Length: 505
Ligand SMILES: Cc1cc2nc3c(=O)[nH]c(=O)nc-3n(C[C@H](O)[C@H](O)[C@H](O)COP(=O)(O)OP(=O)(O)OC[C@H]3O[C@@H](n4cnc5c(N)ncnc54)[C@H](O)[C@@H]3O)c2cc1C
Image 1 (cartoon, rainbow, N blue to C red):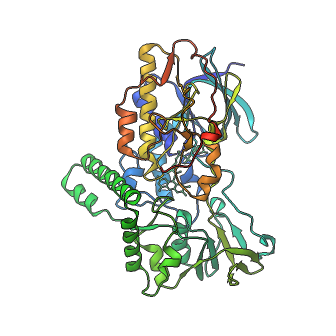
Image 2 (image 1 turned 135 degrees about the horizontal axis):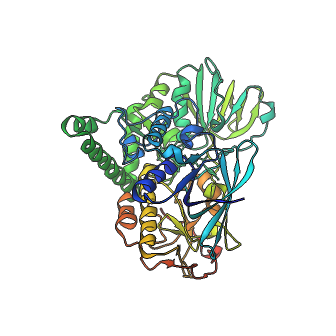
Image 3 (image 1 turned 45 degrees about the vertical axis):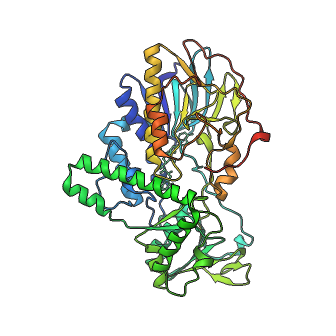
């Protein structure tokens, strides 16, 4: 049976994969590409998560694509609106015709002799095994496990007589009207979910082990509105996007370089929004520095409004066990609940769970270095799309896809069949890819590629630096081996665990 061949195979039809499709067909129009998507529909994150209130945590001028401006008035968008935007983008540019649904990529094997990947896929309900070959493999598979979220086991879970729900598997039919709900967690999901639940629930308790930095932002962007009146639409969008990029970089740098000033700013916002005798120190003053972990957005201070109204209370304590009627805390207190929501985070997964092989040898992503945050050391003709942790994902995804296209065009111009970032510097140290101290990042740090201490092995969390590194730098920078036949055989060198250390982002 003949195996279908593509110039480029993209894995995943989420925000990154759809963006990759756009870049490929506009910047490499001669390339035949397909997007393999494991699920029945496109949208990834924005199709999977269906809990009440699901919304963006970034402004949509930067989370939306540069090539298709976000036109709604609100800067923070609800999940269904983002999904609709992704659907319309895929349709408008004919990207949807390239997507093959229910095709989960299991493994990909590179042959240096043939200079191509063989990709093994399970297709459809019956999980029929199918193979494809491609010249270049582009993983746009996100960063977490779609099968399950992080769900810590609580003693006494079987005793609890109410409903125990993880936001990643939210039951559409759940009736929470007039119910007492305890939401375990203090991250973006909890902060998003709680004000939405509080609209009809009897009461919602936010139960957290430790607080998170919360930033109040208005959902109306006055500057964007003013620019919209003064400039043509394309210019207003471009200026607003740049304004938000620069403000984001400024705020992140302020947090990292002047944490005490930033802490004062966070505290002043809280003092303004919360009732006068609210214990801010216990409930909203984290024990780490701003941006050691993700800062969560509270649009129009909605969470604080529900606290002021008495519909939401915050408890900072440790769980002892679940009981028949709720949660017993280590302080001895018990919280009554009809529903417990475990907003305890994601389970991170590198490379969409695709097992990679180079000439028969297994690639352990956790033992590779990232090259410019796009390719993996000593792995030929492969890129992986990674967004920002401190800004909108799409800003980096756009740069990553544009870089892949530059690389492919460069190879075509020079007749190269393969490219491989070569890392043979034993002195390089492997540092975690994502410099966050959050539990969900730390738990999976070993599984993800590492970054080095210097360019081009660094993953910048900075759009301006990435613009220089990915957009304006030379493709042939001396670190990538280009080859007309097979790439020079380089052993798949591993990052020595002895030289690994935690680092600042
Ligand atoms: C609840 C939530 C809210 C978020 N909010 C924001 C935000 O406001 N701003 C922001 O910047 N980021 C946010 N993020 C991060 C978010 O994941 C990105 O914004 C963006 O959606 C990532 O897009 P992606 O296409 O790279 O990955 P995903 O959206 O995860 O899509 C990956 C796709 O690849 C498919 N796939 C994975 N593995 C395989 C495989 N082996 N074979 C076939 N298909 C596969 C999946 O089915 C999925 O469709 C949020 C994340 C979550 C979970």
